[in-house]
Image (cartoon, rainbow, N blue to C red):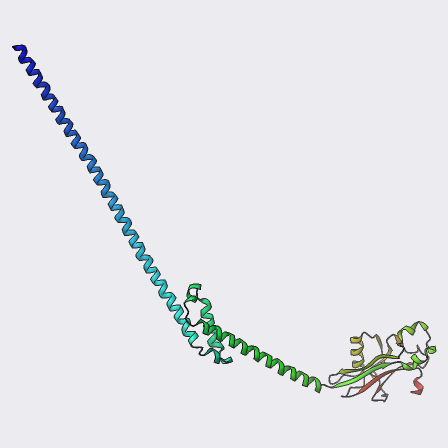
Length: 289
């Protein structure tokens, strides 16, 4: 009997312990579940807060970008409007004149400062292009007219310039080469006896026969030699074209004629007059000239 009671008591104790263990386990599970649920809730809350912050940041960024775009658009419109007004001030591009220069330059300068995107929205840029083209044509025509006028003036001035005619010859010696002291000089004497055919020379006031000879000889590559005839007499010419005085005899040498007359003074003393005909002549005997 006692053994039976002990066994029953032992079983109740075991059942009690089991119940306590189950209750403890249940409680532990509930606490753990609550912890997990709380952790999940906290994570969800943090995620929601982050998403909200990101949404707000994106919203703020979008607002800033929108404001920036709006500000840029306003600036673009203001710049383009100014250019349109300057172009409008030019007027009809087909009626531009040389006086339209300032208006066209101002519009062109303002247009060139615009960005590529701004230029795309300029309404009357075709007017500016046409005005520029027509203005440049006018300038070109004006320059051509001025050049033509200057050319006419130059031609008129040239035709009005004073000039003389000058020639150089040694026909007497060419016709009688036996007079040459040095036969080697035959190569310097043209068979025609003409060293320089009649050539026009434009002169300035105060120039002399010597100045004319010097200029044409230098331009044609003809050698000449001058000699001092004294302070009063000036200079005289002793050789032209490598043909010198006395090469054709003791009375040979160079003389000059003006309008068919031999002046009685040296070539550096004779001042040129418009229309003079000057001839340099190599004489084989000056006493017969």
